Image 1 (cartoon, rainbow, N blue to C red):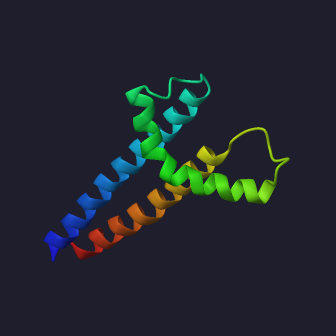
Image 2 (cartoon, rainbow, N blue to C red; image 1 turned 180 degrees about the vertical axis):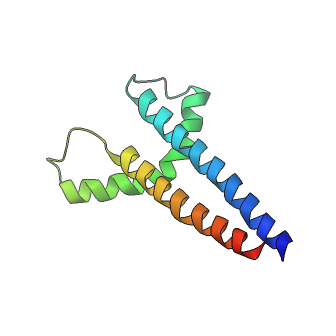
Image 3 (tube, rainbow, N blue to C red; image 1 turned 135 degrees about the vertical axis):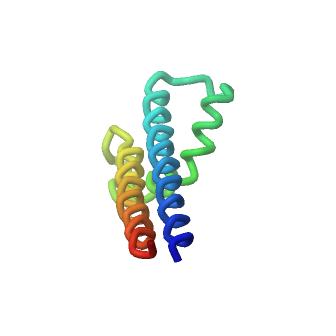
Length: 103
């Protein structure tokens, strides 16, 4: 049983690292968007491909919620970062606790 516990603990650690890296990708994407980057730049395209699938649904819901007058600033990266932090705390914490109990 300790092997499964070690596996879950290791999985939780790797998942934590990936989620933290994704948070930095979202932060970099938000910072890069302030300087009006070249859309054909491979780095900008990679950042867009990594973040747009999660940011676009948030933007659509915010647009419907705020309407056409909406806010002048895009807060979807903040909402995504909060969701990733929640997932990190909840899922990684749960996997770690289960792994520790199986040891």
